[in-house]
Length: 113
Image 1: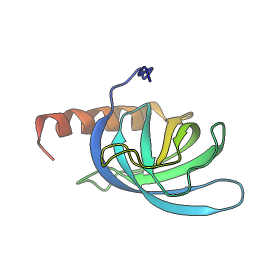
Image 2 (image 1 turned 60 degrees about the vertical axis):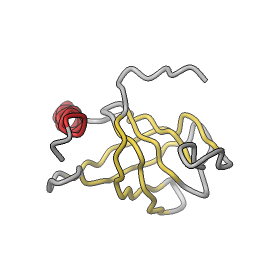
Image 3 (image 1 turned 45 degrees about the vertical axis):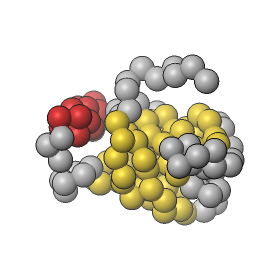
Image 4 (image 1 turned 120 degrees about the vertical axis):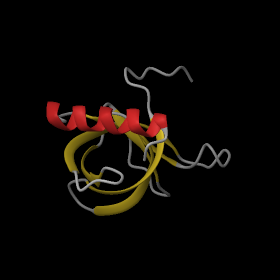
């Protein structure tokens, strides 16, 4: 599959709370960019589903809360590096939160946090 992301994602483990119109979930994201994230989950939601996500940036007290869309899902585990889950795209992230995430991703790349 060709990577169509505008922003490169960086590996990170984050607890993510999210909900659709009916249910509330807690799982872990395994990568992050200001464009979106991959959430490892046994129950990926269908592509096109709109969700609200909330997570804390690593080593900070910065909480990010935004709307997102499920772009793709992987319904079976292919390997340890290709787990079951879903790729989501943030759809209304504030400019301030985009900058905070981009800054955090740069710090992660440099091994600072």
